[in-house]
Image (cartoon, rainbow, N blue to C red; front, side):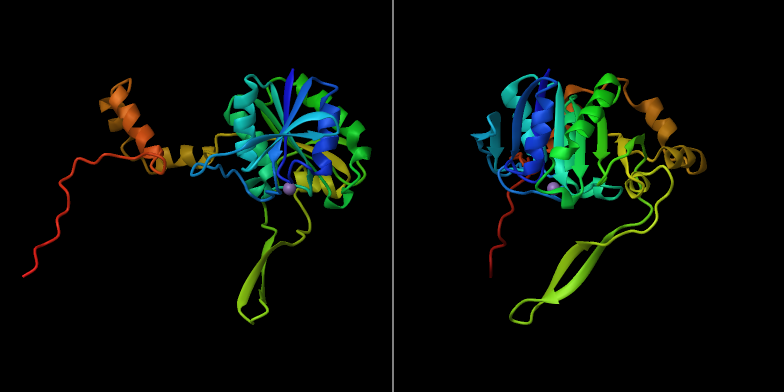
Length: 286
Ligand code: MN
């Protein structure tokens, strides 16, 4: 089994080394991670400049550093290696609970794997565990034993508390946002703002945050389809639009031309588009 290990804290983070060392017990390991810290980079990808892929070494392990985002590292790493069976992302320095799933680069790396059809697991540990993540190794083994046995799981967000008591399945807690903006100023007295995380007190039972507060390792299966199923169903009944007409008059298969047009529209930034419009001529001045 080929295991690609990535993160968002950078290739030289102590967390990625510990995760990669455990991963070697399960298969062939290759580390591909950002050359600098890209925490909170979310699922950004780099499309306006080329990326480098440079060989480095982490404790005798095969490793590459990339001047891109965590999602870039997974895409490029999978491309360079050919076939990858599993992507592990972490161990992140700092938990990724609930709303953090949206901006976490750690989760994004695992999610990029899932988008490529590769199983992805994100693992995050308390920020205070840096630099000694060694005590988490037995727990990481138990997490991997659990997840690898369940082949239907394609994307899982794992968080480890300070002193784990065991493992539980959880759901993401997005009841309240834990972000706060603190105004401050620069040495010249100009306004600046710090984005910061503030503790959220209390969490719904069975959520990832609930598990952390009680000392359980949290395993949250995530989905790629973000459709709000309840509202989707309710809207189709309460506020039908042109669905029936669309179904009746739309051809069963799209034409190659239509597919190409949509692909071009998606890639607006990267495409140089030829527009069949008359050139705009400057009015002749009087
Ligand atoms: Mn991070």
